Amino acid sequence: MTRGSAYLRRLLHFDRLPKASFSSFLRSQFHLHLRTKAARRRSDDDPDDRHRRDNAGDGGRRGGEHWDRSFRLDKGRGQYLLTNPRVLDTIARVAGLRPSDTVLEIGPGTGNLTARLLQSARRVVAVEIDPRMVDSVLSRASRLGVDDRLTVITGDALKTAFPDFDICVANIPYGISSPLIAKLLFSTSRPSSFRSAVLLLQKEFARRLVAVPGDSEFNRLAANVRLMATVELLMDVSKKDFVPCPKVDSTLVRLQPRTDVPEVDLDEWLAFTRTCFSRKNKTLGAIFKQKKRIAELLGRSKSEGRSTKIFMEQKQNDNGAEETDDDKCDDDDDDLLEQNASEVSSFKEKVVGILKSGGFEGKRPSKISNEEFLHLLQLFNQNGVQFR
Ligand SMILES: C[S@@+](CC[C@H](N)C(=O)[O-])C[C@H]1O[C@@H](n2cnc3c(N)ncnc32)[C@H](O)[C@@H]1O
Image (cartoon, rainbow, N blue to C red; front, side, top):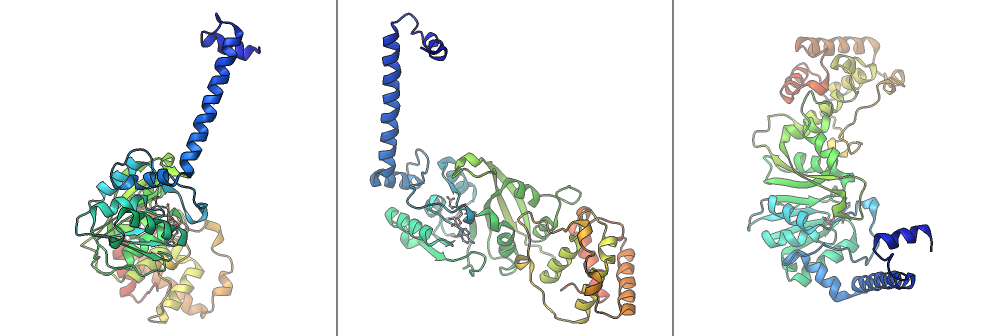
C-alpha cells in the first residue's frame, strides 16, 4: 500500500479495518463512478431525455439547458449557448416584454432564449446565420407548439433588412457587437420605432459603452451611442453560464432610443466623430493639423454630396475604438497630397481658425461632451468644412 493510500485509509477511518475491506471499498466506489458516467452518457443520447431538456424553456425550467451535441458548435460564429435557466429567465423578465410585442432576436441558436421570449410576446422574428441552428430552433418551436409565432430569417444580421419590431432581445455573437448596435441605432427609422434593445455583450465592451467624457475608456462608439440612446447595465453574467465556456464574462445591457435626438445629419456626425477619434490621446489641434487629414477634408469639402461609407460599414474593431497609434498616421502623407499646396495651406488655416474660435484646439476628444462635439461640427459645417 502506498503512503498516499495509507493516508486516505486513515482519513476515511478505515485504518482499524483489514486492508482488504479498504481495497474493496475503493473498488466499489470506482465502479459506482463508472456506472454513473455511463448512465449520464446514455441520458445524453436518449432522444426523450434530450427532448425533456429541450423543453426546459417552456414550463418547468428545472436543471440546465443542455447542448444536445447533435452538431459541432462553431466558435468562429460566436456559438456560445447560454444554458443557465435562471439567467435565461431573468433576461426574458427584465426585457419588459408585452403580450402584443414583436421581438427581434439576433442569433437564436438552438432557441434557449427564443422559447422564453415566445412565452411573453406575441411573436418572435429571429435572424440566424447558421442553417443548422435555424433547423434546430424551428423544430424546437414546433415541439413546443409555438412555431406559428416564430419566423426565422436565415442570413447575416448585418446584411439582412430588419422587419418592424417593438423590442430586440438577444444573446448576440460578440464579434458583431459594434456594427449591430450601429445598425440598430443609426439605420432604423427616426424617431426609432422600437422601444429598446436588451443585449448580452462582452463585459468589457459593455463598460466601454457606458463610458462618459473624461473616463479613460470614453471612445467614439460611446459618443455615437450616447447621441442616439441611453444605455443601462442590467446584470453581469458569468462565462460559466455558457456552453462551451467562453474566455470572457458578459453583461446584459439595455439601449433605449432617445426621443430627443439632436437635429444633425447622422452620416456627417459619424464621419466627424471618426476623424475626432482617429488618434489616441491627441488634441483636436494635433488631429486636424495632420497633412493627410487636411487634404482629405479639403477634398470632401470641395466635392459636395460625395458619400463615404457609414459607421457600421467602416473597418472597426469590436472595442468601438478606431484610434490609430500615434506614429502611424503620417506615412505616405505626401503621396496623398494631390491638392495644390497653397490651397491646402489656406484650408488648414481655416480649420485651425475654426478650432480656435470654439476653444477646441487644445482639447482632447476623450474629454468632450456630445453637446460640445455638436457645436464644433456646426462651426465646421457653417464654414464649409464637410466630413463626408
Ligand atoms: C452567442 S450564440 C447565442 C445562441 C442563443 N441565442 C443562446 O443564447 O443560447 C450566437 C448565435 O448567433 C448566430 N450568429 C453568428 N453570427 C451571426 C450573424 N452575423 N447574423 C445572425 N446570426 C449570427 C450563431 O450562429 C449563434 O447561433
